[in-house]
Image 1 (cartoon, one colour):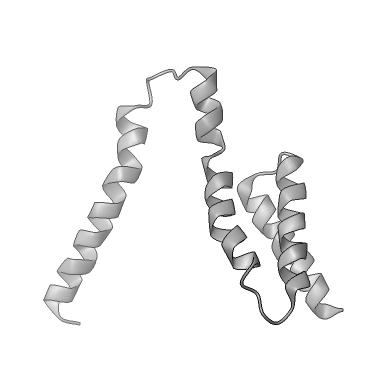
Image 2 (cartoon, helix red, strand yellow):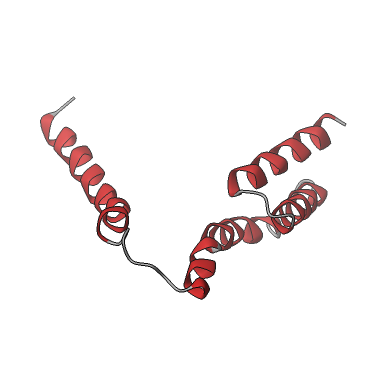
Length: 100
Protein backbone atom coordinates (compact mmCIF):
# COMPACT_ATOMS: atom_id res chain seq x y z
CA UNK A 1 0.00 0.00 0.00
CA UNK A 2 1.26 3.46 -0.85
CA UNK A 3 2.54 5.65 1.96
CA UNK A 4 0.26 8.60 1.12
CA UNK A 5 -2.80 6.37 1.60
CA UNK A 6 -1.42 5.18 4.92
CA UNK A 7 -0.98 8.80 6.07
CA UNK A 8 -4.53 9.62 4.98
CA UNK A 9 -5.90 6.67 6.96
CA UNK A 10 -3.80 7.63 9.98
CA UNK A 11 -4.95 11.26 9.74
CA UNK A 12 -8.60 10.24 9.51
CA UNK A 13 -8.15 8.02 12.55
CA UNK A 14 -6.66 10.87 14.56
CA UNK A 15 -9.36 13.31 13.46
CA UNK A 16 -12.14 10.95 14.54
CA UNK A 17 -10.37 9.92 17.75
CA UNK A 18 -9.88 13.44 19.12
CA UNK A 19 -13.59 14.39 19.43
CA UNK A 20 -14.32 11.07 21.09
CA UNK A 21 -11.58 11.36 23.69
CA UNK A 22 -11.87 15.06 24.52
CA UNK A 23 -15.10 14.72 26.49
CA UNK A 24 -13.65 11.82 28.46
CA UNK A 25 -10.41 13.56 29.34
CA UNK A 26 -11.46 17.21 29.65
CA UNK A 27 -15.05 17.10 30.85
CA UNK A 28 -14.99 14.07 33.13
CA UNK A 29 -14.91 16.21 36.28
CA UNK A 30 -17.83 18.44 35.32
CA UNK A 31 -21.02 17.50 37.13
CA UNK A 32 -23.96 18.14 34.81
CA UNK A 33 -27.45 18.92 36.06
CA UNK A 34 -29.92 16.03 35.91
CA UNK A 35 -31.76 17.56 32.94
CA UNK A 36 -28.64 17.61 30.75
CA UNK A 37 -27.65 14.12 31.84
CA UNK A 38 -31.08 12.92 30.72
CA UNK A 39 -30.72 14.71 27.40
CA UNK A 40 -27.30 13.19 26.76
CA UNK A 41 -28.50 9.76 27.85
CA UNK A 42 -31.19 9.84 25.12
CA UNK A 43 -28.88 10.90 22.26
CA UNK A 44 -28.15 7.30 21.15
CA UNK A 45 -31.88 6.52 20.92
CA UNK A 46 -32.56 9.70 18.95
CA UNK A 47 -29.70 8.92 16.59
CA UNK A 48 -30.90 5.37 16.12
CA UNK A 49 -34.40 6.65 15.38
CA UNK A 50 -33.10 9.19 12.89
CA UNK A 51 -31.26 6.43 11.05
CA UNK A 52 -34.04 3.85 11.08
CA UNK A 53 -37.36 5.69 10.69
CA UNK A 54 -36.75 7.08 7.18
CA UNK A 55 -35.80 3.59 6.00
CA UNK A 56 -39.09 2.15 7.24
CA UNK A 57 -41.04 4.21 4.72
CA UNK A 58 -38.74 3.24 1.84
CA UNK A 59 -39.12 -0.55 2.07
CA UNK A 60 -40.58 -1.78 -1.22
CA UNK A 61 -40.65 -5.58 -0.93
CA UNK A 62 -42.25 -6.30 2.46
CA UNK A 63 -43.60 -3.36 4.48
CA UNK A 64 -44.23 -5.64 7.47
CA UNK A 65 -40.47 -6.04 7.79
CA UNK A 66 -40.11 -2.33 8.59
CA UNK A 67 -43.20 -2.20 10.77
CA UNK A 68 -42.11 -5.17 12.90
CA UNK A 69 -38.60 -3.77 13.27
CA UNK A 70 -39.94 -0.38 14.29
CA UNK A 71 -42.44 -1.78 16.80
CA UNK A 72 -39.84 -4.07 18.36
CA UNK A 73 -37.38 -1.18 18.67
CA UNK A 74 -39.98 1.08 20.28
CA UNK A 75 -41.05 -1.61 22.74
CA UNK A 76 -37.50 -2.54 23.70
CA UNK A 77 -36.47 1.08 24.21
CA UNK A 78 -39.67 1.88 26.10
CA UNK A 79 -38.83 -0.92 28.52
CA UNK A 80 -35.50 0.83 29.16
CA UNK A 81 -33.16 -1.47 27.27
CA UNK A 82 -29.66 -0.43 26.31
CA UNK A 83 -29.16 0.65 22.67
CA UNK A 84 -27.27 -2.55 21.89
CA UNK A 85 -30.11 -4.60 23.36
CA UNK A 86 -32.62 -2.65 21.24
CA UNK A 87 -30.64 -3.45 18.10
CA UNK A 88 -30.29 -7.10 19.15
CA UNK A 89 -34.05 -7.40 19.79
CA UNK A 90 -34.81 -5.93 16.35
CA UNK A 91 -32.40 -8.30 14.64
CA UNK A 92 -33.85 -11.25 16.54
CA UNK A 93 -37.47 -10.33 15.75
CA UNK A 94 -36.72 -9.77 12.07
CA UNK A 95 -34.71 -12.99 11.85
CA UNK A 96 -37.64 -14.95 13.27
CA UNK A 97 -40.03 -13.15 10.88
CA UNK A 98 -37.78 -14.00 7.91
CA UNK A 99 -37.74 -17.69 8.88
CA UNK A 100 -41.56 -17.90 8.93
